Length: 255
Image 1 (cartoon, rainbow, N blue to C red):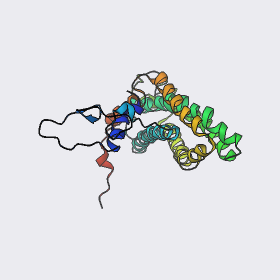
Image 2 (tube, rainbow, N blue to C red):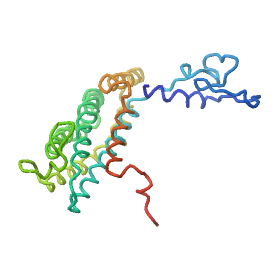
Image 3 (tube, rainbow, N blue to C red):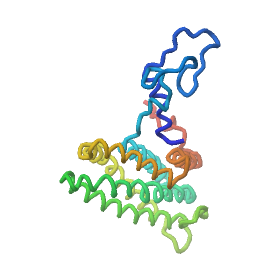
Image 4 (cartoon, helix red, strand yellow):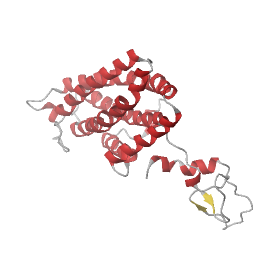
């Protein structure tokens, strides 16, 4: 299911779905509306296909930043274990780094470099910022390569503890690479979310803006299959569970 499809039911409900005069056992929801007489297009009870809310390019990109943030948490857990002298979770860190490579560097950043940065530069907007962001993309790819190599290479099943074996980088080197990646990408994505993407919206005509939303989603499913974004999120969740950091409540401070 495409992400834009997931937004259809809330859109129909937000339009004012009427649930009046429904006795017990008579209320059924079919595709986001109550069964009964059909509703004309555009009416409060319109079917989901008639009340579609498009996913905008910045929304796409910011959701993908959410995936990046979660992998940064995986890296933080790896650093914590390295600093504590615990075994390196090579398999999980390798899986996280390979997601960075495939989903962030080879997909998300390519969209930014092809569709987001050029209109800004053409309009004379944020040119210095764009230059720094491009450089950080390149440096990030170097760090990701080091993390992948240090945790068992590009194999889907790295050998546990590979970061400490002869011929590979030491756990401390691995920790330093992950720390450098985190230090760069936290301000990187924050600047894009709060400055670059709003400016991008301002310089792109509405028709082109809508077209890009479709291009982004079609490219996502071409590369990552029918599950697309949700499938990548599931992979991240599996890594978090393996590391014992999936439970959100564990991050709540005691005050």
